[in-house]
Length: 85
Image (tube, rainbow, N blue to C red):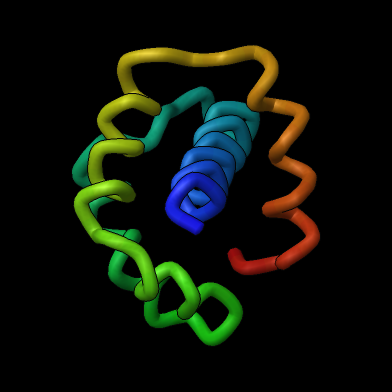
């Protein structure tokens, strides 16, 4: 369960980062992600994120900023299917 939630959060913010860059060549910051995570957990479609340890999701945001995996871009489609934004 933890792994799936962490993977979802990673892919969610990867999609937001890609969209932000394509739109106006900017990137979202750690603080923007930090502010959005509680909102994401309150969203009806993603409230299941509250079921796991919050520290796991917070560490994933730090990992996201330190590494960019080209393979992860393929997983953005799973986030797009939820149409959260």
